[in-house]
Amino acid sequence: MSESCLLEVRGVTKLFPGTVALDEMDFDLNRGEVHAIVGENGAGKSTLMKILSGAYAKSSGKIVFQGREVELGDAQAAHELGISMIYQEMENVPKLSVAENIFLGRLPGGRLPGFVSFRQLHADADRLLQEYSVDIRPNAQLSRLTTAQQQFVEIIKAVTVKNAKIVIMDEPTSSLIKEETDKLFEIIRELQRRGISVIYISHRLDEVTDIADRISVFRDGKNRGTLKRGEFDRTRIITLMVGHAVESAAKPAITRQRIVFEIRGLSIRNRIKDFNLKLYEGEILGIAGLMGSGKDELVKSLFGLWPATSKEIHFLGEKIRLSSPLDAIRYGIVYLPEERKLQSLFLELSVKDNILALWTYHVYTGFFLNNRLETRLAASQVESLSIKTPSVNTEVVNLSGGNQQKAILSRLMAVKPRLLILNDPTRGVDVKSKEAIYRIIRELSTNGVSILFLSSEIPEIAHLANRVVVLSKGENFGEFVDDQVTAMNILRAAMRA
Image (tube, rainbow, N blue to C red; front, side, top):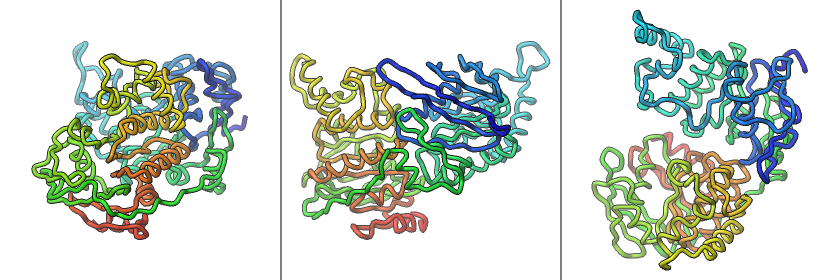
């Protein structure tokens, strides 16, 4: 172990019933470095981080911290060593102030026992916020901040109050725009200057090659290779992640003969103004735009989730009314939300129950539930979409993010939709799962399903869409068709707005 090495993981194995989550994993972290970890969902990234943060106990192997072997039996043991993890789903108290969240459990006492000195609390918090150049008021309620600002608060709490030597960041930019990501990177570099090490988990390869000193690639519970800056190569990283080179498939040809879905004069107060759109049978139509462009409100309105002041919708040549999701589902219009855990999954139910939730309600006409039929249908969907699960009766919470997303897609496919609305369908999933989801989307398009989708990644829109509409301030600011659909054209239109 070199003098610069702060943490070393040697041959760590983690066993779950029927699953080897980590298989003699090796990993090391130097003082003051950013070491990124990439890999598909289920590769072992989160399992190792939970072991390092004390949430899981390892089955075997050694963890060496500052030259001595340690046991991380719980979160308190990890905190005492200076290991702090910032989860994708942040652990904070939204109704309290920024200052109260930063010093939670260590509030400065007032003149009388049991009272808090809020003047001292706000002064201490303001000093810390200024040290990291974070422009947030200490007395602001946390729930009123953006996701990025809440993450900045979590980082400051971790490195100051918890005196962290290692900060683990799990998908920290999954909900951030570019400007917020740039600010996060400034904070990370400041952590480095203070000698704090960062383990950075992300699926966004452009980010990790920008911020990381080293990148480790995990696959099937093993570290398949660690690259130093200067060795970073996207093709090499992806090959290590999936075990082979990933080839992109050509977009299916579109004839645009039959209009399936048409919007006329859609307006949403302070969001969308007199918007018109046509979607053809089998077409993949991307909706692009920067934060605040109105794209999220648009697609939610089309599924009855956001009220519109006016809109006229025609579906298969018939004027229809969409005032609720139930109306949309009756017409064969289904929606995949951007937050799978909060808005889509029944985490404590089985894979089967999650897949068939919509089918049971909308398609099945029997008076009694038919367990044999349901199991057969769910197993068919699991096989069709290559969902990795020990059984259809496994709780969906135990699946990786990519397989959870495929389970939601199979739920929508089970009702044989005519129109599929996808809101960031590959958010938080690995490269291999992304390719699987792309394949599913293309197959649906080839079979005549019309698809309207949003993505936070413009290259993904260019990769999939046959046509793209760029929104800005609720208006159509540009439209690109077939060969015109490139990331550069989309970005230029969005930035020009």
